[in-house]
Amino acid sequence: MNPLQFNYSIFRKSNMEFNPRNPLIIYIWMNVIFFAPCHGNVTFKDKPSLLITNKTKVESSSLYVWGPYSGDANKTIDRNFNQSYVDCMHTAPGQSEAWLKIDLGRVFNLKSVRIWYRNDRGAYSTRRLSGFSILVSNNSEWNINNTCYQDSGNVTLETVLDVNCSDTAQYVKIYANKDIDGGAILEICELEIYGCSYQDSVGNCISCDQCKNDCMINGECDEQGCKSDSLPPPFCKECREGFYGRNCSHVCGHCVKQVVCDQVNGSCPSGYCEPGWKYTPDKRCNEECDGGTYGLYCSTKCGYCAKGVSCNKVDGSCPGGCEDGWTNLYCNETCKKGLYGKNCTRTCGHCLDKATCNHVTGSCPFGICEPGWKHTLERRCNQECVGGTYGLYCSTKCGYCAKGVSCNKVDGSCPGGCEDGWTNLYCNEKCNKGLYGKNCARSCGHCLNNATCDHVTGSCTSGLCESGWKHTPEKRCNQGLVWDAKSALHFRMSEQINVFGACFISKICKMDNIYFNEWKLNKFSACRNGFYGRNCSFLCGQCANNAKCDHVTGSCPSGLCERGWKNTSDKRCNEECENGTFGLHCRSKCSGHCAGGLSCNKVNGSCPEGCGDGLIRTAMIHAKTVSME
Image (cartoon, rainbow, N blue to C red):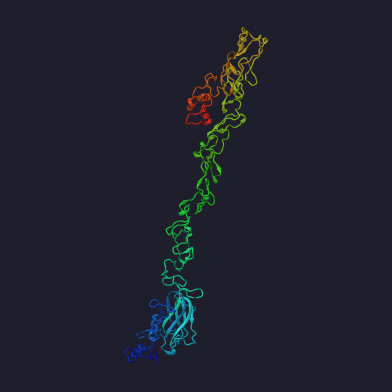
């Protein structure tokens, strides 16, 4: 009888108490130890097992313990392939279930399982294994439906048994629930589970040589990582061009000259980025320029792009045009002088001294306009004076220009002359005393008590005339009385003398400086134009606007002289301006810089032979303005 069978038959079928000093027991154990079949430690290099001695965790249902013997579950992975009773795991009899659970440490692609079962009972060795199954799981929970192998139970099993178990699992469970010889029992001597970490789509194992240790079922290297530091985890394989990092899932940045980035960390080899991308400490060149910058190193500031849109990060161009006041493709140049606004298409107004306007708003510096242009809230100086005004700030009212024509918006001059009764270039002065009408060319009549006439109509204010002058509907008192001998007889001699003031003896009669060759003449007249005084023997002076002087005193009617002539107390305008002065009433001073030290022209102040060295001729309008101050 086989010693182990004898051993079992003695102690399984009797109530013999175990005593290690019993000679029979000693005999049996010596047979077990020294004469049991010995198969040695076998290594199957062609199919490396997933089980690792002293590392893989194994558990089992209740174990059979007999004296010094214990059916420890760890005997199934101790690499001892002996199949005698004492070298095997043995679960306790009398149980409804017997099982051995193996924890592989992580999930693997399983292929097959090899079981070394007890072989010291002859044909009955694998009797208790009949109908067993292999369950798999990815966690510590079990489901009878997760069975990768189920024995039919109707054939005798080999003591070294290979079964297919194709699945993915971390936990493997050898399970028996048939009552054979007093319960469900397992007697497994050694176990190997075959599979691999990674396999292809048809189930062929794929090498994980790129991993430092091993890879997972999805091809990722385990926690020990890649064999080479130059390969990106977790697959530790070359990324296709343009990708890097874990799973090669990250897209490379914008390395200069489109150089491929490092496939592990994504850095650009030179550290240089394409224009438009930021240089960062990780050198990945995957951050666009920000903060309104562009170009190489994002070192250039964007221009003034319309609506606050950022410029092109590469070349700085503005995709939607420029803000008002800026021009060119990059919107970094202000409008040219004289232009402003959107696309620099608007023309500046009339800023003082031709100053350039603001390139954005068009406003003039300090808001001051050239004379003739209105000061508005926008300060653009692009609206002419209106409402009969002119000059700086349009603050001066126009004079009485002829036919209601507006005056010159700049200097206030009247282009078509003056209305009746007004004089000078600006038509803002009434005719001088004694003159009236168009161009103040007409002399007032003989108003009572030397009263002045109306400067427009020439009518005497009171409507009363001096003696000897006719009262007419126009009240101008400019028609003398007509006398003849017959009418003169009606006056006493004294009255005739009073009326005429004439000397009848000499037959040269006089009435208010109107001379008669004879008192009997039936007509009399004033001096002809251009003369005045006794016997009309004096030439009139240079009255303004060629007005006639008074035929009695020689004074100019308005008291105004032509430019270049002095206004004296007698208002005769017959004295030229002194050297060094010129203009209206000689009020303006010469510049003093005429060539050769010559005095300036008495009328307009110009230098007869040009200016002295280093000087230029100034604008006449300036001279005109000075003369009016």
